[in-house]
Length: 68
Image 1 (cartoon, rainbow, N blue to C red):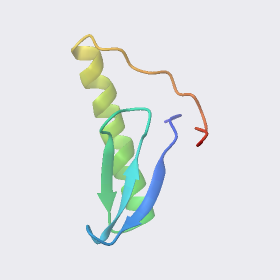
Image 2 (cartoon, one colour):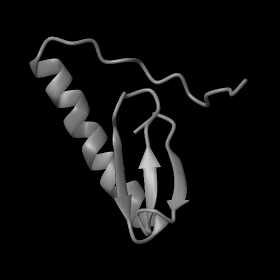
Image 3 (tube, rainbow, N blue to C red):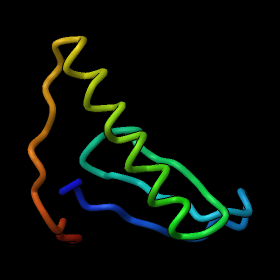
């Protein structure tokens, strides 16, 4: 997967959260960083497949996102 993934610890969830900012709402969690990354890669693939099935645009990966 060529999309940027952000991984952080969430005290509220008691887990690592992995987000793909370029795919709105695409996130997953896991007890370890590796588990969260594996999960979000699967979720991102499903996100892309669903968008294609619905005829919605799939953003091209932009690489590293820059924050303001």
